[in-house]
Length: 291
Image (cartoon, rainbow, N blue to C red; front, side, top):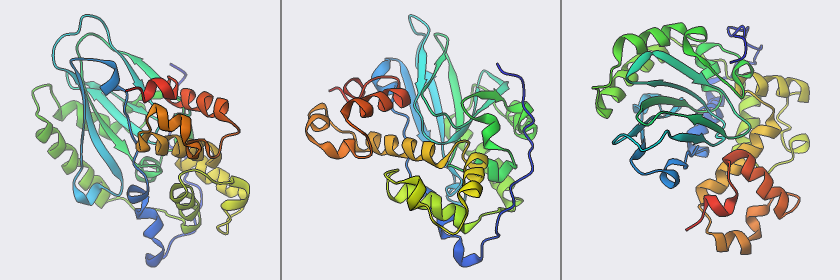
């Protein structure tokens, strides 16, 4: 693991939004559905389930999730996480004292697991983890780090409240209660110009020209700084991930991938599309969408 960075950074100065400007800030969930599809195609006796958080939390947390074996596997399991633009907290229920946070990743990540496991996670919608915990997303990009060194109070809560006998409903109730309390004390800084640019990307499924289409009254330099702090990378990289996620959500067949050139919008050619898709997913589109 790389050396632990200084996580608690000063928040960039934002223009405080007025109440009627908050729509873009709370619309992310309606505009974006981050998908993690790899388990269904890669293993028997391994399940991945997502749980919806309390309605009060859904503008901030996309889901809680659980990845577990239903019986001991015949060999260790490699879990592939595709790029989704989010920041996740996760931990093993059998060892909750050892928890982690994973930042924005601009390519897929593989985790070598054992032959039996039971992981639980919290997936925050883009920008929300840095907003809630005043943490620079760039310090977590393309890596995972022990949660204790990033947000120690959450690590202590997980360590003291979780164990491997909890049901999905009990896990959800514990997380709902904790994060509802956290959010009730959180003061959000939401610049409508920054979230306006984010909304343009999401509404256009990442198919934008960053230089010309994000003119929301903020300088390119400041916009880059805000994307780096709140997303973890540039607007251009985030747009590529959104475009990739939109293709996953469409679930194209191999035939439609060959025949429908709409899937290649924003790419130089089919070879470029395949290369970028493989970078985000870990396999070619043909393998990902094989029937």
